[in-house]
Every structure is written in C-alpha cells, then in structure tokens.
Image 1: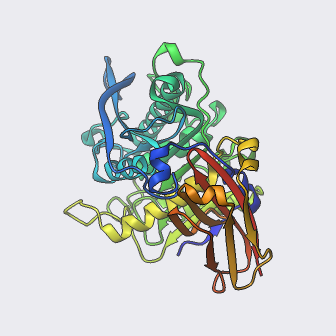
Image 2: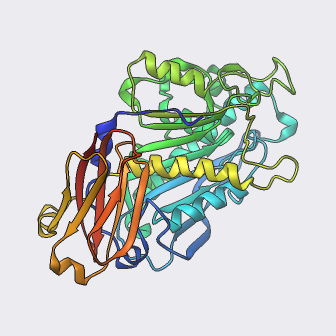
Length: 415
C-alpha cells in the first residue's frame, strides 16, 4: 500500500519559502499540519446555472465555502471537492466532503464542496451515465472558473487550485482535466447536444482558464485511456481499493457486481498508471489499498466515516498537496535569518543552530523528505535543536523554518 512515484526534486520548488500569518506561525507549520482551531463555512453560494438531463429549465448549482477563521492571508490555495454517488445521489454535505473541507481549512487552505447535475435513478443507463459524467465535468469546470474570476473576493490564489473527488466526482474530474472536444463520447452529441467542456457557468467568467495545479481522485476512472495526453497533464494522486468492482481498480464494466456488463466500460487507477508510464509521465502518486473495495473509508450501511481509513486517505492527500504548493519566495528575508544546519551530509545527528537575536522570538520548523512527507516538526522553539536522523532513509531532506511572517529553507543530505 501507498507506493508513490513522482519527480523528486520538483518537490523542492513547492517547499520554498512562503509568507504565513502570525496566527499560523504560533501554532505550527501552515499546510503541513493544522494551524487554525476554527473554520468559517459560507453555504449555498450560487456558482453556475445549467440544465439537467431530461429537463428544459436551468438549475442553480450551489457550493459551500470553507476557510480558516481569523485568517489574514490574501491569496490562499483552494481545494474544490466533488462528491460521489453514481451520478444519481449524493450532495456537497456528504460526510467525507465536509470532513475534507474542514480539515483542509484548519491546515490553512480554502476549500469548497460543490453541487453538480444528477440524473434520476429511474433514467439510469449506460448512455445516461456517460452524458451525466460529462455534464458533471462541465460543472467542475464552472466551479474552477467561478473561483478564479472571484479570486480577490474569496482570497484565492488562482494559480493554486486543486481538485479532489470521490467515485463519480473523480470520474467527473478526470473528464474535466483531459477530455478535448474531439474526444467527446458520441452520446454527448445526442439531442440535446451538451456543448463544449468549458461552456457552462455564468457568462461573466466564460473566458477564464479552467487550468488547475493538481488533482486527488479517489477510486475514479476514465472511459478511454487515450484521452490522457502528456501535453495537458496535471499532477495526480490516485487512491483506489484493489477489490473495487463499482469503478474497477484496473478495467471492466462499472457496477459489475450489481449489473454485470450493462454499465459503461471504464479504466480505473491501475490502468491509468500504466498509461502514464507508457507516455513518459512520472509526476504522479498511486496508492492502492490491498483488499479494499469501493469508497472504503465509509462504514457500510451506516454511511459514516471509518476514522482510521479516512485518516490514511487524508494523510496521503495532505502530503500530496503540500508537495505541490508553490509558495512565494522572499530572498532578502531568507538571507536575514542566520540559521546553520550541520553537519551536512549527516549520518546520525543534525543540528539546527540559530543566531542569538532569533532565540528571543519563538520559531517553528518542519522537516520533510523530497516527496513532501513530514518527518518531524517543532513549534515555539527558543533554542538550537538537534535531530536524530540515524533511522531515516538516505536522501535529501528540507527544513522549512518560520518566524513572524518570515521563513527560510535549508537542505541537508542523510547518508
């Protein structure tokens, strides 16, 4: 479980110095761990209006927006979450989407849980599913463009928007990310023609780019592997149970355990990994969970979250996002912090030594490997520290230190 592939040293870009609020600094390292205690949620925000399958009048689509309470940062990374439910059920208030948004906001992100168009279960068919997956992807695109257009109002960094989905939500995300106009399924041209991928939403943000910085699809898939092209690729972090028969782990018919051979044929995360390898993409993560089925972090029947399994998925998500953040660099401020890290290379112990003037003000630091995984952290440090790295794997490690809105980055090699 948790096999990871990525381009290692690209992660160093995402670990460079950023500017953080004093509140966050007092409690820990923003984005790597919770730094806010409370979250503000704004509900029922309209972001699009679109016509559902089988209807003639448009439906207003809504989202719930989560942000750290008391946060003063002017441009926060945003995670848009897309719920699951076979395109016939579900909502933005599903337990996993609420929990993801709440935790991410406590880590310092802005987050949103969005609506998308659903179909009636009585109209369920292979054609209807293909059409509705496309419509859901259009609604994901509308949400991205809505936030980019209103980035000042919501204090969003438009260059750092990420997507996270569960099941049908992940299918919609894959579709939105990779499907070009000439790759549209024939079903989407049937009357009424559903239009281009990025044609939905309000006219005011029609020309806004739908590009995102990365995506975390949980147990998702695509109808055809050839839609994934190297030129339009964004970093992916895929999570999938190896025994999933609802959206196949590798390839097969959806819902094959219930309706064998009736629903669309899909290629799941394992097959997508094969396609990425074939076209030479290495900046992805793949986390297969052995023996787990579909949406495995839910407790069957009760539809509440299994804390242990959800925690595992959240940790994967948190580390992936942290790795792919590109934070503002402030070279003069970095140079002002007189900090030494030695010996370098190291085998057993590493010392972080601060100048005398820094010891008078609490400082926080976090050590990560080049994959963005947190190894160790400390808050409110008033003196030099020594770290035992004797049991750590050999490789490059990054120490990010923050103090009163100023930060510095140091690297060391463990032999």
